[in-house]
Length: 491
Ligand SMILES: [Zn+2]
Image (cartoon, rainbow, N blue to C red; front, side, top):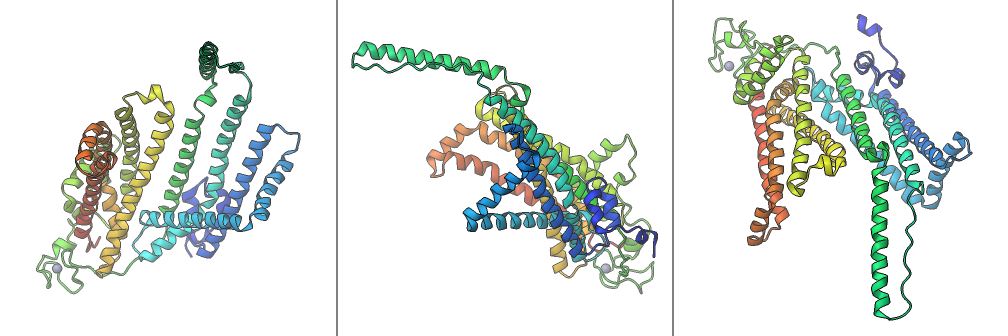
């Protein structure tokens, strides 16, 4: 029994610790069976429902300012839900089952996407089981995230509705229509109506100008709170899945790096009996030296990041030759994480550019909710797409090599895919530029749409879509070249 085995925590501790210290919790609860992890997941899901119920009751109480005590308000929210089940049992059941299936599918999808991040030298099935265990055990984090983001939403929502409820606007008297058919009376009536509308607009503008900050920026703040809560959860999940864990060492024999032939009985100064490559090129001391990035120091980050990022795009096979099977995973993870904020900013700027190209206006001045809520949300979405692209590429290449009878390359493929993220920065920059151009050239699409039987919108969309798909294929093929060079790596 090692020291680690003695420091096992019971699964229930995840309720308290998974969101505070995800990596430590993972280290101490990796022994938990999938069945127990699933129970924790369900327990946390029920707690999330309870948290949402409490938030709804709280919002109602704040808004109505009722005398009813808080527990009474909670009981009323539960009653409302139960009444739906009595009134429309079939519909209510269908909605409930739908939500449960959606949540379960989301967690399975998250586990699937997180699998390469924590993959080790083991079977793919073991890597997926690990990711699934960690994803389910991370569910208690959702309760905390929902409570925090929900508090923010409740406070902003109630303050906004209370402000809207105040009858601050002076009532504008509506003129009454003339009773006769006298045209002069009708002309007078039109004028009165126009001035009443003018007065109403004036009042509305006055009211708009005195909006307090929480009404003015409410949507933006709610969007930012929800994005922050999601990012917090995903970062914790990545730390939990990637946390240290013991994996039994594989007893794989030394192989030829170029053909995979078993070299256990071949002398160190001989050549591979299968393909003739010198054994020293597979097992010599200079093989697989690792990347310069792995020996980075504070102050050399930006130079090494740039060189590694550009170098891997230009020479993917060289990356495949240098990469090490047993390198500390923190190296590729730091490298990879550094590019995510850049993708976020590119997508943010891209949406603002599209808005400006479409409307000819400055979104910061004209529509701050686009600049500060919609655009950052798209930035978060771009990060999600980026992560999906990287993880799905890793899965695709691992599975395709496995189907060819080659060992599980997932940990190696993950490293190659991560070190290739410089390409993704260029890719997202390219996609954003295309998007802005697609909006800026709308007259050209109208022209083309007229001569062909496609609509102008379809032409603009295809202009954006086709190069984007080609860019994605380019990423997969770059990673494939790196991975296939490293498929027989010994160290
Ligand atoms: Zn060989």
